[in-house]
Image (tube, rainbow, N blue to C red):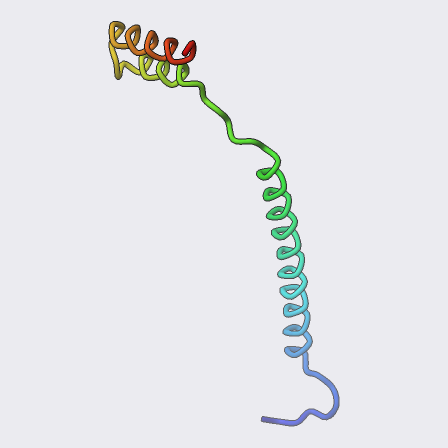
Amino acid sequence: MMYYGDHMSGWAWALAGVGMVVFWGLVITGIVLLVRYVGQAGQQSHQPPPTRVPEQVLAERFARGEIDETEYQNRLAVLREHVRS
């Protein structure tokens, strides 16, 4: 390696400039990703999980065609009997 005294060459300045831009880009990207992660984690913990009533599940199955009308009516009657008991 050649010694140029106490001054950097043009390539060294260019490499230092590119290195500084990459470094600060990584720092800023890390901060943005951290803020997004913390923000999403806070939102998810405050929302209660959606509750579905058994009648809704039965109606969805009937709407999708998984059960016919007779089976839907029979199961709905059973569900409503258990609610009264």
